[in-house]
Structure formats: structure tokens, C-alpha cells
Length: 166
Image (tube, rainbow, N blue to C red):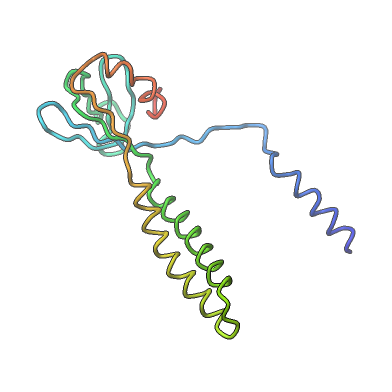
């Protein structure tokens, strides 16, 4: 039985990079906050960006009648963040903080309270890591346009790379 387990473990090491025939890319949805030159704020999902304007879906319905079109001369500031990034950052921060806390607790030279200390420090740093991870992930990429078409055109490749329809 042991040779079979070793062989299976050996095969599992090399199966990490294998995948099926279709290598489809998952669509990443990006939330966008666009402040116009008149001071109004439009919030939604970045649908597309072209040379003249950006299109934002306000209610997650992607039909043409539900899209808000903002011309490049009317855009003051665009802020972009990937949807779900805060939750992922919180999970990464919690796992990192808990791992650090447990390692710190185990490194303490207290033999009789070793398990309690590592549990408490893991819990404490896990909570702290959750807050730090969520806070770092909440940062939005800010693009200052100020109604300038040349600045908008220079940022257009990035906007098209994060839009639903390139």
C-alpha cells in the first residue's frame, strides 16, 4: 500500500500545471466611480471605453438602454477597483495574520502555556490582519482626467483592459 501512496503523491506533484483543453479566461468585473466636471458622481460597472467616451452599467444590466455614456471632456476623475477585491484582501490578511500570530506564539518560551499563547496570538493577529488586508484592498486606482482628451487617450489602454467589452 505504501508504494501506491508514494506513487500517487509523486503524480500529484506534477499535476499542478495540467488543465483541460479550453483555457478560458474568467471575466473580471471592475467597479468604477466617475466624477463628472459638473460634480455629479456616476457609480457602476465599467462596460466599455472607446476614444470618445466610457460606458457604465449602473444596475448590472448590460443592455444598451441601461448604459450611461460619459464623454471624455466631461470626465473629471475615474476611480476603479476590481469587484470582490476587499473580501479577498480580508481573507489573505486574516490567514497571514493568523499564521504570523501562531508562529509568534509558538516561538514564545513558555512551555506550559504554549498552546494557549499561540491560539490567542493567532486570533489577535488574524483579526488585525483582516482589517489591514481589507483596508489595503479597498484602495481604488485613481485616474485624474480633468476633461482633457489627451490624458483620457493616454489612459485608454488601461481602461479598455479592465472593461467588460474591450
